[in-house]
Image (cartoon, rainbow, N blue to C red):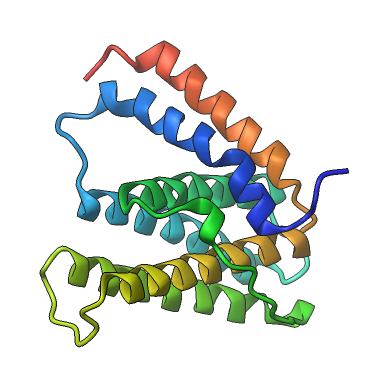
Length: 188
């Protein structure tokens, strides 16, 4: 039986995500840099937040699980590409143990946004847009791994809370993306 942890999920789907992103290169007008990857990741986070805002307005009982699972898969796709872009090793992600209560979905979403902000900050430092006191690349890499591990853990918790099968969600997202490429891949 497959280990059920965010890290085992990441290791299983990392290469597939990188390959899928490369297939999408034909739809882009220019090559992506670190900032472009962050913009795309931020867009996916905003989609997830938007779903929850709409669902909280409707009812605290009903959630659109298909849309939530799709957005979580999209975020993982972009997160894996950020890991690749930063030359991080997906195997060096750490297991983060946190406890949560079912009433704290809002807190998990807030924490996702905070850690995303920290990721932006660290990549801005890496790319020379901000000054930082940490000069050792090893410490910077370790900190990036911790931030990405924290993001991934919270995504896994949301998936777990809503009983979303991440393997199914990622497979479905990949299938839909490939179908999109077949239809529109040659159109720019």
